[in-house]
Image (cartoon, rainbow over all chains, first blue to last red; front, side, top):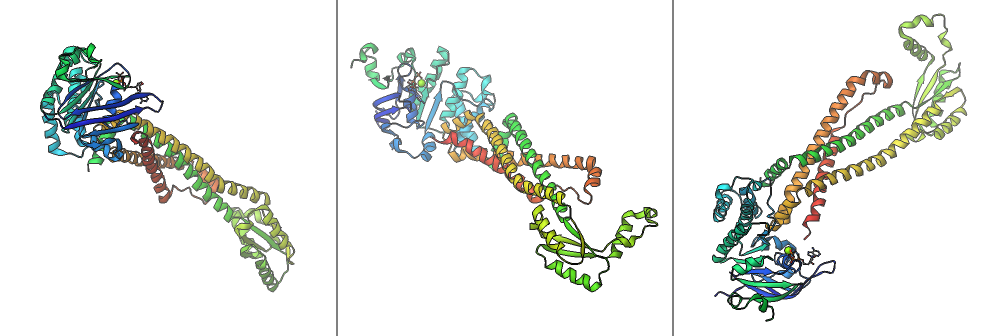
Length: 240
Length: 293
Ligand SMILES: Nc1ncnc2c1ncn2[C@@H]1O[C@H](COP(=O)(O)OP(=O)(O)OP(=O)(O)O)[C@@H](O)[C@H]1O
Ligand SMILES: [Mg+2]
């Protein structure tokens, strides 16, 4: 197994300006090519943890390394380049309603300065991977929820990032569509992409034997590894 | 060029919001340029009237040409005289006749030789106020050979007050107006940028640099400014023409030889620059909020 580190947190705390301690002394590590679920009840700090990874928030204390780069000290002007290496997917899709599926996906390439044929080729290729090539000229609002989430996944992946972060990606989707989406991500993971999914859907987490990082009130109370997760029931795992 | 193309696409995509903000820019700049236009013509009118400020002093009858010449020299020595013109008795008669033109009949039987000779004196500008004038008149009256001095004291005092108020007021009013339209326009632009908050957020998420996010908005802002200013000036020109067409004759009757003029090219350039700066600055400042990360 390749254990090269992709995401590392060293004693990271995040205190928001209103003195809410969202994360408390978090130390964790996600390896290259890993698929990790980040769970915990509402307000546990899942979104905050993801935001720290893509530099939407900066840590109050501690160090964060992404792909070997210490991003706790990164200059603001470098953040865009970091984000091109991280795909991000949200519960509420965040698609632009007045652009077609194709334009929504190509949007992420345009931003990097790519134009013309290369942009089209890459966009088509990514749309094919998520199974939406035939809908590329549709407007997003004409698509089903699952299809819309595929568009955002395509947009997140079109820049060939090494990490995919998803914050409650299936929160608005039916159970079977949810499985489709997670399976799709699982495919990308099989091709070597590092994936972190934040969710409080415990059924979902149980269906896949992946590592689970569980947060409670801003602390990691549990980091199950797949091989142990199958051996230790969740209720007991928290005592380890 | 990509950014121009994108700005064009974005304006078309957000046609409603852009339409609203351009209309507001047009309206604000129209008000501003109407102000400039009125001011321009008012200044012109006042300058014309000021040019007419003169003191007339009548010469006693029976002075010899030599004495008249001496008097002229002594008048020229009084402080404040810019130029002086002698109107002899026969000049005065001619003027009088010309004034009555084809109604010469009225003058028949009148002895025009009672019209006195006079000096028409133009003053330096710093004497264009009530006090200056009366001091000047007092000095003149001490000269020998002058029978009477005439100047429209009240009228001149009033005019000089108006001129004074306008000279300062135009800056104050203009400044207030400018601040008001800056406020309105920048808020309009802020709204149009807020309406695209989501797009900016997504751009940031997918790794757009600040420059890449800003440039299209700044181009859009300057296009809005140019377009708004051009439309405002076009409208102003139409309004101006129709005003001339309708009220031209009556203005001529009142104001005589003055013609109303449209904004000069440099003022037109100024209005357009104001439009552009408002567009660009408005966009820039509203963007700053989103982009500090
Ligand atoms: N921008 C912010 N400013 C201040 N407090 C915040 C901010 N964002 C989150 N918080 C607070 O930090 C804590 C953690 O929030 P976070 O959104 O990370 O939780 P979460 O695990 O994602 O919750 P959920 O499952 O409801 O999405 C909460 O108490 C929340 O109120
Ligand atoms: Mg959350």
